[in-house]
Image 1 (cartoon, rainbow, N blue to C red):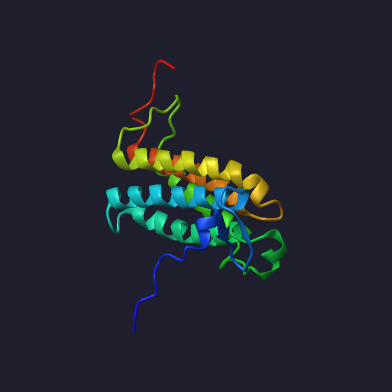
Image 2 (tube, one colour):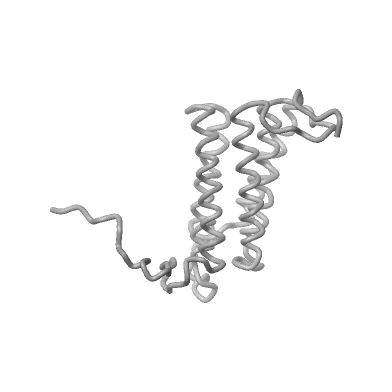
Length: 181
């Protein structure tokens, strides 16, 4: 039996299909937002690869990267179809946000916070986490119009950027701070 091809050519007209139906221009707010989340997920994959399988960074990031699939599903759904989404499976829940907060709190206890501005790049993994944080912040800004309240997408992305900052500092310690800023 022949294998199904990866390309459909359906998007050659500049549109993309959405979860639960509908098509929108590829540069509209939904694909722009979930595409940026996809970019963030790829950066987090680089951090995981650099840290190594089974590392503490890997253990923290894998569940988050799975959450990002849920988040992208929600962003890839037209507002009129969001009632079809399943909490925790295709829409972000408050519990998912709280889980990020607990992880931040757990990591916070393991290192001393910098007292000065941080100069990123003291560690390759931390640098990837910092890059991921900036992409998540961009995704958060783009999600403001794409996922209006009561959606938990924006709070999730906001906490995720905080977590990535925390993870980068946890990873590198506080040895790399700008003393002259």
